[in-house]
Image (cartoon, rainbow, N blue to C red; front, side, top):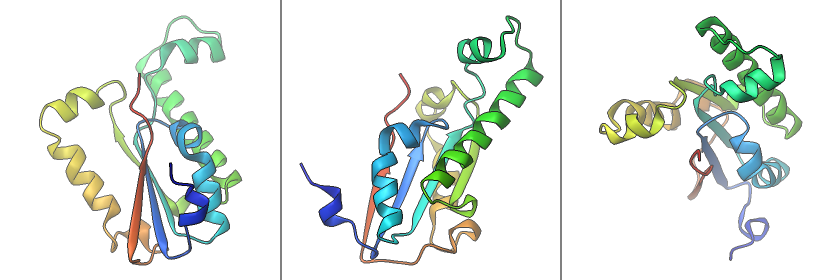
Length: 150
Protein backbone atom coordinates (compact mmCIF):
# COMPACT_ATOMS: atom_id res chain seq x y z
CA UNK A 1 0.00 0.00 0.00
CA UNK A 2 1.28 3.46 -0.92
CA UNK A 3 1.05 6.21 1.67
CA UNK A 4 -0.21 9.12 -0.43
CA UNK A 5 1.27 11.56 2.10
CA UNK A 6 4.76 10.43 1.08
CA UNK A 7 4.06 10.65 -2.65
CA UNK A 8 1.78 13.64 -3.11
CA UNK A 9 3.58 16.95 -3.62
CA UNK A 10 2.71 20.30 -5.13
CA UNK A 11 4.00 18.97 -8.47
CA UNK A 12 1.10 16.52 -8.75
CA UNK A 13 -2.43 17.16 -9.97
CA UNK A 14 -5.42 15.48 -8.38
CA UNK A 15 -8.71 14.84 -10.14
CA UNK A 16 -11.56 13.13 -8.36
CA UNK A 17 -14.47 11.87 -10.44
CA UNK A 18 -17.46 11.17 -8.22
CA UNK A 19 -20.80 9.64 -9.22
CA UNK A 20 -22.76 11.86 -6.77
CA UNK A 21 -22.16 14.71 -4.34
CA UNK A 22 -20.68 13.41 -1.05
CA UNK A 23 -18.91 10.45 -2.71
CA UNK A 24 -15.78 12.60 -3.03
CA UNK A 25 -15.67 13.32 0.71
CA UNK A 26 -16.46 9.77 1.77
CA UNK A 27 -13.97 8.12 -0.59
CA UNK A 28 -11.20 10.70 -0.97
CA UNK A 29 -11.66 13.44 1.64
CA UNK A 30 -8.34 12.69 3.34
CA UNK A 31 -6.44 12.74 0.06
CA UNK A 32 -8.12 16.00 -0.96
CA UNK A 33 -7.26 17.60 2.38
CA UNK A 34 -3.62 16.51 2.05
CA UNK A 35 -3.47 17.72 -1.57
CA UNK A 36 -4.67 21.15 -0.50
CA UNK A 37 -2.14 21.20 2.35
CA UNK A 38 0.77 20.64 -0.07
CA UNK A 39 -0.70 23.08 -2.63
CA UNK A 40 -1.32 20.44 -5.28
CA UNK A 41 -3.93 21.53 -7.85
CA UNK A 42 -7.22 19.74 -7.29
CA UNK A 43 -10.21 19.24 -9.58
CA UNK A 44 -13.45 17.50 -8.54
CA UNK A 45 -16.03 16.41 -11.12
CA UNK A 46 -19.47 15.08 -10.26
CA UNK A 47 -21.14 12.90 -12.84
CA UNK A 48 -24.64 13.56 -11.41
CA UNK A 49 -26.27 15.96 -8.97
CA UNK A 50 -27.61 13.04 -6.93
CA UNK A 51 -31.14 14.27 -7.61
CA UNK A 52 -32.79 10.86 -7.75
CA UNK A 53 -32.37 9.61 -4.20
CA UNK A 54 -36.01 9.44 -3.08
CA UNK A 55 -35.61 7.69 0.27
CA UNK A 56 -33.02 10.14 1.55
CA UNK A 57 -35.14 13.01 0.28
CA UNK A 58 -38.30 11.61 1.90
CA UNK A 59 -36.52 11.12 5.22
CA UNK A 60 -34.96 14.58 5.15
CA UNK A 61 -37.96 16.56 3.94
CA UNK A 62 -40.77 14.48 5.41
CA UNK A 63 -42.68 14.28 2.12
CA UNK A 64 -43.86 10.96 0.74
CA UNK A 65 -44.64 12.14 -2.78
CA UNK A 66 -41.70 13.50 -4.76
CA UNK A 67 -42.28 15.38 -8.01
CA UNK A 68 -39.82 16.18 -10.78
CA UNK A 69 -39.55 19.74 -9.39
CA UNK A 70 -38.76 18.26 -5.97
CA UNK A 71 -35.97 16.18 -7.52
CA UNK A 72 -34.51 19.24 -9.24
CA UNK A 73 -34.57 21.13 -5.95
CA UNK A 74 -32.93 18.14 -4.20
CA UNK A 75 -30.18 18.09 -6.84
CA UNK A 76 -29.55 21.82 -6.31
CA UNK A 77 -29.36 21.19 -2.56
CA UNK A 78 -26.85 18.37 -3.07
CA UNK A 79 -24.70 20.60 -5.33
CA UNK A 80 -24.72 23.31 -2.67
CA UNK A 81 -23.81 20.81 0.08
CA UNK A 82 -20.96 19.47 -2.07
CA UNK A 83 -19.54 22.95 -2.59
CA UNK A 84 -19.81 23.62 1.17
CA UNK A 85 -18.02 20.35 1.99
CA UNK A 86 -15.24 21.08 -0.50
CA UNK A 87 -14.87 24.60 0.88
CA UNK A 88 -14.25 23.03 4.32
CA UNK A 89 -11.40 21.10 2.68
CA UNK A 90 -10.03 24.29 1.11
CA UNK A 91 -11.20 23.58 -2.46
CA UNK A 92 -12.68 26.60 -4.26
CA UNK A 93 -15.84 26.40 -6.43
CA UNK A 94 -13.86 27.07 -9.61
CA UNK A 95 -12.09 23.72 -9.12
CA UNK A 96 -15.44 21.89 -9.17
CA UNK A 97 -17.57 20.74 -12.11
CA UNK A 98 -21.05 19.23 -12.24
CA UNK A 99 -21.65 17.25 -15.45
CA UNK A 100 -25.34 16.74 -14.58
CA UNK A 101 -25.94 13.33 -16.07
CA UNK A 102 -29.19 11.73 -14.97
CA UNK A 103 -28.85 10.16 -11.54
CA UNK A 104 -29.43 6.39 -11.47
CA UNK A 105 -28.55 6.22 -15.20
CA UNK A 106 -24.74 6.24 -15.18
CA UNK A 107 -24.34 2.50 -15.54
CA UNK A 108 -26.69 2.33 -18.51
CA UNK A 109 -25.10 5.41 -20.12
CA UNK A 110 -21.67 3.88 -19.82
CA UNK A 111 -23.02 0.56 -21.07
CA UNK A 112 -24.40 2.29 -24.16
CA UNK A 113 -20.89 3.19 -25.24
CA UNK A 114 -19.70 5.95 -22.91
CA UNK A 115 -19.65 8.41 -25.81
CA UNK A 116 -21.25 11.43 -24.17
CA UNK A 117 -19.93 10.85 -20.62
CA UNK A 118 -16.41 10.25 -21.93
CA UNK A 119 -16.53 13.32 -24.19
CA UNK A 120 -17.72 15.59 -21.39
CA UNK A 121 -15.18 14.23 -18.92
CA UNK A 122 -12.40 14.79 -21.44
CA UNK A 123 -13.61 18.34 -22.08
CA UNK A 124 -13.80 19.19 -18.38
CA UNK A 125 -10.45 17.67 -17.50
CA UNK A 126 -8.20 18.90 -20.29
CA UNK A 127 -5.50 21.34 -19.13
CA UNK A 128 -6.95 24.27 -21.09
CA UNK A 129 -10.46 23.90 -19.67
CA UNK A 130 -11.94 27.21 -18.55
CA UNK A 131 -12.50 25.87 -15.04
CA UNK A 132 -9.10 24.21 -14.92
CA UNK A 133 -7.09 27.44 -14.98
CA UNK A 134 -5.76 26.96 -11.45
CA UNK A 135 -4.28 23.57 -12.37
CA UNK A 136 -0.85 23.66 -13.92
CA UNK A 137 0.73 20.82 -15.92
CA UNK A 138 2.90 18.45 -13.95
CA UNK A 139 5.18 15.49 -14.44
CA UNK A 140 2.68 13.09 -12.87
CA UNK A 141 -1.08 13.01 -12.57
CA UNK A 142 -2.70 10.94 -9.84
CA UNK A 143 -6.31 10.16 -10.82
CA UNK A 144 -8.56 9.23 -7.94
CA UNK A 145 -12.08 7.97 -8.43
CA UNK A 146 -14.82 7.46 -5.91
CA UNK A 147 -16.29 3.98 -5.73
CA UNK A 148 -19.19 3.29 -8.08
CA UNK A 149 -22.66 3.65 -6.63
CA UNK A 150 -23.98 0.52 -4.99
